[in-house]
Image 1 (cartoon, rainbow, N blue to C red):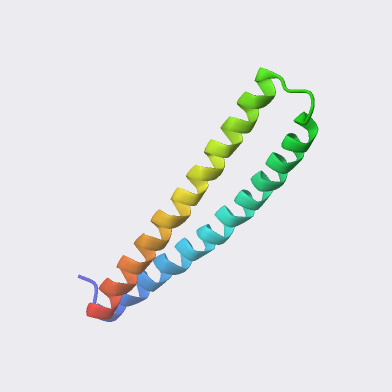
Image 2 (cartoon, rainbow, N blue to C red):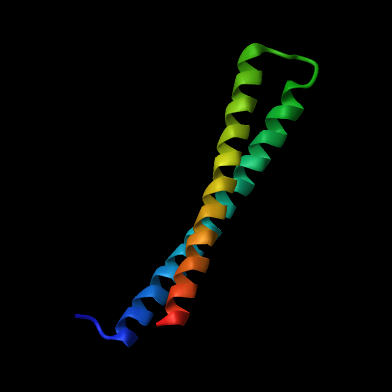
Length: 86
């Protein structure tokens, strides 16, 4: 059985890994924002259903990244709360 200190170290490592994941998610989100901006700019004046579908899909992907970030941060908060209690 792991000692309390080992548990704390493992929880801290898990939180650090989750923080790195959030940074990565943010980088991907930034790239999607750039893609969306370029696609919207390109589509101005030449509306096509395929372009609208592409924009909608990118917007949905971007929203899911926001959700993933929120869920990851909530997990980190819970893990840190657990670590502070033990």
